[in-house]
Length: 416
Image (spheres, rainbow, N blue to C red):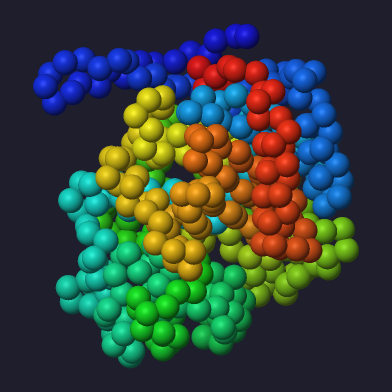
C-alpha cells in the first residue's frame, strides 16, 4: 500500500511535556486517492449491494467512504462522474454536498466564538446586534427580529419558515414581486426578507431554515472582516487539510476541476431559469441560485475530504487533530432531545449516531458518525423523486453494510 505524504504536529501539554505526535495529512486527498487503493475481493459483495442500490434509485454516480477512529479505511467511487464524457466516478471527484455545508458553517461560527469575536447568545439584529447596519434595521417591522440570537439560527429557531416558499429557492418570484431586474445578492435578499413578519417568536419553536444559515454566513463575514469563503477555507478547511472544497457554481460551465456532472430523474421536466431570463433549464443547472446559498448549501467536496473534516471536529483525543476545542465539539454535539437540532448537525443522539444530510436537485449526501467511532459517508451526483426522503433509504443501506461488512474492511489509513 503506497504511503501518502504527511506532516507531523507536535502538541505540548500545559506542563510543558511533549505529547505523542499527532499526524494529519497535508496532501490533496482528491489528487492521490484512487479506487484501486480500496480494491479487495472480500468487499466485492458489499460493492454489489451499493451498485444494486444505485440501480434501484437510478443514481448515475456515487462515493462511499468508511472511517474508523480517524483512520480512512475505505474510499471508492461508483458509476459515472460525467457519463456524457465517459468519466468514471473516483473517490477524489468533488460534488455539491447541499446542506452538509451547514456543518462547515457551524464550525466557522464556533471558531469565531473561540477567538472571542462573538457569543452564541449575541443578538443578530438591532443597534446592539452583529448585523446592525441601518439598512437592515430600517427594514424590520416585527420587533421579534431583535430577539434572534446566533444560537437560534444554528438550531433553526430564528422564527423563519418556508410557508411562503423557501426564499433561498424562490429567487424568480422574489424578483417578480419586488420588480427586480436581476437576482438580489444576499444582503439585498435579507433586507427584503426582514420586512416580513416572523412565523414564531425566536426560540419558542423550530423550522428548518436555509435563510438562517445564509444569515450566519453574513455574520461570519461581518465578524471576521473576510469574505465567507475565504474565512472558511483559511480558518477551517486548510487547517483540517481539506484543500478541495469550493463554493459551487450554478451551471455546468462553472464546474470546478474534478467536479462531477449532476443528474435529475429522467422524467423531470425542465424549469424556468432562476433569474427570470425566460429560458427553460434542467433544474440542477440554473433552476436555483446554488452559489447564493453560501453557508446554507453551496459547498462542493469529495467524500474523503468530508470524512477528514469530520475527523477534525469529532473531539477524539487520538488521531486527526481537531481544529476547534473539545468544548466547542461538545457544544456542537450536545444532545437535547429528538425535536431539537444540534449545532450544524441534524441530530447527535448518543445512542444512535451523529447525522448530517444534504439534498437538492442533482445531489444527495449523508454522513453518519456512530458511537463506536465509525463514520460512513455516502454522496451521489443524482437526485431522485424522493427528494430529502432518500436519506432514510441511504441510512438503511449504510446500516445493512455496517452489519455485514464492517469487520471485513481491511485495516489501513488512506489519510496517510
